[in-house]
Image (cartoon, rainbow, N blue to C red; front, side, top):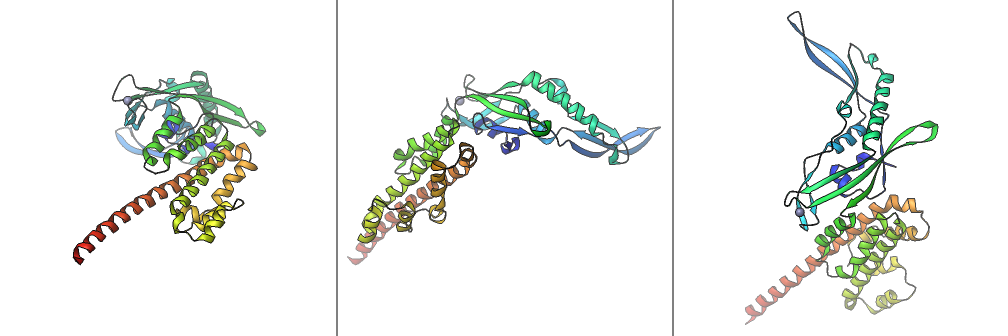
Amino acid sequence: MENISKYDINGLLFKMPLYEKLNIGITKIQKIGRSETRFENFMEYEEEIYEEKYPKDFDEIIDFLLYEDDIYGYCNKCKKENSLKSVKINVDERLLERTLHGQYGDDFDDYDDYRAMFKLNDRIDILLKKHEYFTKSVNCSHKGNHKQIFIYKLELQYGENEEKKLILQKIGQDPSNIEFHNHNIRDKYSKYKNYKNIKSDLNKAVISYENNFAVGGFLYLRRVLEKIVDYKYEEVKCNINVDNQARYEEKKVKFIEKIDILKAELPEHLTENTYIYSILSAGVHSLTEEECSEYFSVVEKSVYFILDELLQLQKRNKLNKKIQKDLNIINSKIKK
Ligand SMILES: [Zn+2]
């Protein structure tokens, strides 16, 4: 299970998929030493203070509940990126007291783990009692009724040796992550000339993953890869020699051979990492749902990286053709 630090505030709202479990570490109490200026008998002097504070992750979940600053993100009603405002949740005041135990002293031995832990457990109880389910709202700064809602659940689980685990899950949201995703890919890849033919597979990959069917996600990403390679082949076929054409069109041809034939025309990320296809195939055939879910975001990034490169290649080719045409015109003028 990954940690809450996997996402920043923006990520917890807009990227975290439904039902992903994030661990909020509650064992590593932060021990901090600082000095404070004190006055006694008209004398000013510095004294060391040792404090035990919330574990970092616990700080993070409290920060998330309280967060009320502006964020830049997508408003699905405005249909564009906008300035948004996250609404603060009023938490129990005791949770705002982030120091668990503090004392003056002259050495770190004065830390009192037991007392700090006791207090932390108390705070965890308060958090769960008051905010077991909590809702973060995000408002669009453009229009008051443009609202986005994200619902979370906090839960205490017991692992081996009765070890306590605090778990955060997102259990609902409006708009769905798929809307954010669609917006992002539409924005980025709609200029890729075969976009309309892969759009539905890209969407289904994410829908599958978001609904805890990561194996399906792998299947759709593999289809995207197969399609973009075949489209490239159709595009450059006339420049390929007959033998290689026959090889490519052979029924039993392996994907890796297809890439080999088109090596010069395909994005480097794909030709240098051809095993992305084996990974996607393993997902379809042999990996477990959990494994696919764990690897999904990396293979997804890889596919998008390939698309990025395809788009750049497309732009380059277009520009190349235009310059060639212009040169030709100049050349023929000079000849006259
Ligand atoms: Zn809006």
